[in-house]
Length: 123
Picture 1 (cartoon, rainbow, N blue to C red):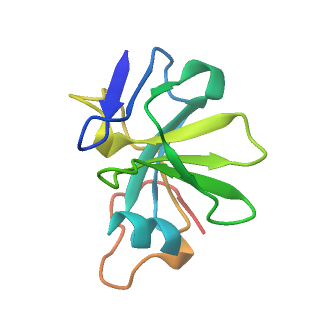
Picture 2: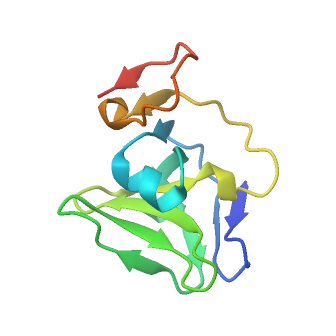
C-alpha cells in the first residue's frame, strides 16, 4: 500500500497497485509549480483513491494539475485523454519501495543542473 498526503493533511491519496512507471519531469510547468524537478509515479485512475477537495488547474490542452487549495502542495498530474493519474513521490508517507525509471521533458530542463544518473531521458 502506498499512502501520501499534502503538507497540511487536507488531501490524502492511496493505492494498492504497483505503479506502472516512475519519472522525474523537467518541463517548465513542473519546475515553476514545484520549484524544481517533479518526481512522480502513475497508476490507473480506478486504482487511486483521493480524499479531500483537490484544486485542479487546467495547465494546458493536454493535462491538468492537482494541488491542495490550503497548503499549495502539487500532488497530481492527469492527462485529459488518459486513464492514469500521476502522484508526487515526495508526498508519499514513508519509504516508497520504488526506483526511478526515466527522466522526461529533458529538453526543457534548467541549465543549472546536470542529469547524470544514467537513466533513460526523453526530450
